[in-house]
Length: 142
Image (cartoon, rainbow, N blue to C red; front, side, top):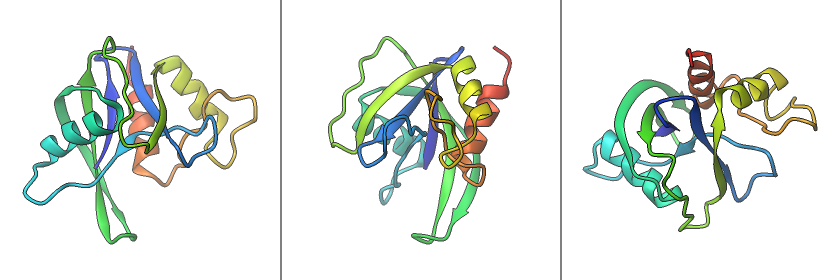
């Protein structure tokens, strides 16, 4: 699963994995455990990776992934931005709340392979469901 977390308004959470270079951000993702619903998986993964509690989990779409022969299922969920981030497992190095305008500027700058060195954020490429979800959220009215 992959999920865009937003505050119900103008801000969304983007995160950087510890293995990624600075400024490279995306959505949070994880694997469904046996017997777990997608909605429970979203809440668990978000809580495990960045310590936030989410609500109103909504399905957005899916994308087949050749490795590891899986299906990436996209969601969005709402979280209270007053919650503190906590990074328990070391997978996520940093996360933050970004405004629609910040995300739009990053989208306009390109993707992970083409972004100018002056861009605050580097976002996933156009072939990924992460980019599609981010673009959809950024295009929505404030």
